[in-house]
View 1: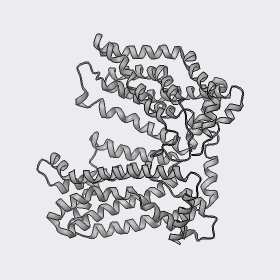
View 2: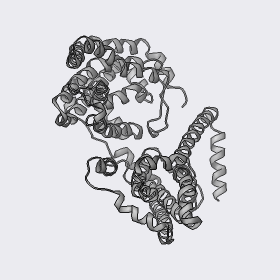
View 3: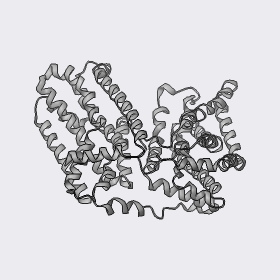
Length: 495
């Protein structure tokens, strides 16, 4: 039955009307995956040299064991954003006269064979052969490397359960955010050393097979836990009904005061929290608010005035992260229902003004959440204030202008990672105004006067853009209206 289901999946792919496009996409993604795995293998060969730079003559194996917990925390994060659920295939098979357990066994086993399952093997195999084998022999290699692989592969089953159970809830968001704080913040802020939790386990695995055997049992237990969860919840009504009603009445009351554009902004907000791709963008925006911790206290970026030129990029990024990401696909988010707005009086213009309202509101929230960075100095608060005004006064209009060049359709229910639907040449070109244009204004005034004047000019120019919002936004509205039929036609293309 396993090979029968594989054959059905193959026939489904080759009989699709978009087979050629899907094949090209898979070949490109396969090449990228092979390239990334090559980099991982290269890092594995360099792992010994890297550890020698930080060991100060200490035992390389014990040092690596003390940091393995951070690898697994990082793996939890990238599996959350990249690993795919087999639910779509499950929905297409449940109505067939095939045993449910056979279907789920097939889907789970097939999901395991992915590039993610090779990362731990490629990264630690060279080190185990070069260092572990020299000191502990083949048995040490098998038990130590096997313990790492069993832990890594167990995360595969745990993540399949976790994403199906919590991905659409605030609990899932808080758990992932907590993992990020534990992984990146604990050592950076000096709270505690997470390596002390799992380091002794892998130290023992070098001389004793018990940790390896215990982790094999944990791997099997994680698989059957995930398996029985899918079996008990593998009903079509469980997979579809909850998604339709969960966010039925999630309005932002403040937007309702702005008339029809405000209602469109509320409609856009519902779209964001209902669909997987847009929710991922929203979640990433929350994580990237911590971006300043990398730069603001880094000695490499300290100066006498407290303002380093890189802080402009950080300020633009933090105070407008959601707007910068989401607005790149300005109308593609509405590709599935653009004809509805086209058929309504003032529908298109109200949709665009609603998006503007949402972008400004999200940037304001990002700015308010970044205010605690003022503890690093008043200069940081000044940078964030000026960058906030520049984002909503100037940069927002530029990004939207670029995004309106041949917008493409996309499926909102697909994940955001390695999903390039809706992405075209314009999305790559708009990197220039996002990162170059602020410096084109800041640098001349920095050289002529000083850093503070350069920052203030950015803020004043952004404030002037806010005051001139109506004529600036009307430029993009007129552009959409003049090309509305061409845009509508492009959105009807098959994905």
